[in-house]
Image (cartoon, helix red, strand yellow):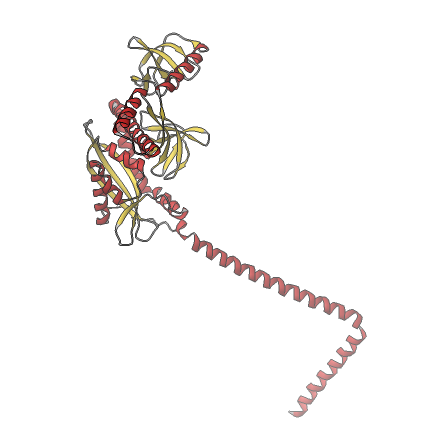
Length: 427
């Protein structure tokens, strides 16, 4: 055994001696090669370390992004539930009862928050509401802990109209520190919450519920021309009265308290001026499609989020509003809009507009014959949106034409007198 070990050791020593002599002889060649190999090994190790570090950082960043934007993607696909939360049912029963009664104190307790315009509009609208005989309340879990997105399908009965009118509103319901539910309209939702609500609103069962209300409403309008006129007149009257109330409130703040005699004089002057309140801007009360024309099947240009504001070009009699969107005309369902800015037009301004109209008509091309009404349109005493309303021309009706003006209005003969309609609504 010892002899065998000695033989192996001798063999290894001999080989090492040969290697030593070879390295000594070729050291000028071998040493640079060894150095290059060492450098390459060092570089490879460094690259691998950097790659590993970068991968670790990417993993951490991805994890952080998921944590930060979790609400953006964690939208549960759960079905709508009707009457699932008794406390929320109670909340909306109180809220809609308060709307009928014009009880803005109760409404203010249930909503965070109602601004002055909304309070005045609620008070004014309540004068025309008889009841909400049908109230269906659906919910889906909201983005905050203890919150819900509520969908209220309601049928509204006005005093001056026999049938109930269907509609649907979306509400964001949250809990306060005491666990009480309230309607959140403070407009301070972050992007995560807004995105969550948008995503839920686009889920199939929510779209179906919205379509149910929209189809029922549009069918009523298509079958009853008087309803179109009634709603248009009602909205105009409410907006006018709200605008006047806001103007009075602003005037009171600016001038302070005045005597009863001064108030009476101011009232007489206001009446003599015959001012007309015009809605100039509106804001969205719900997430709603913006379309190229006033039709549910028209191309979609985008979506309006809750609180988005637009310049109002025209409120049409068919339940749509013409707005300015990205520099062009577009359309949104009127039921999803509310006034956000109004202006007063005095009789003097109206006279100026009539003078401008006369100047424009001088350069208009003379035409004879009749035109056919393409859409329900107001007939006015002057070529102005603020002109006195003489009546309504309905789809398919023939009108006697005096001349088609260059300012976008068509002069017609109506009930033996000169009148005007917007040219875009006749052909």
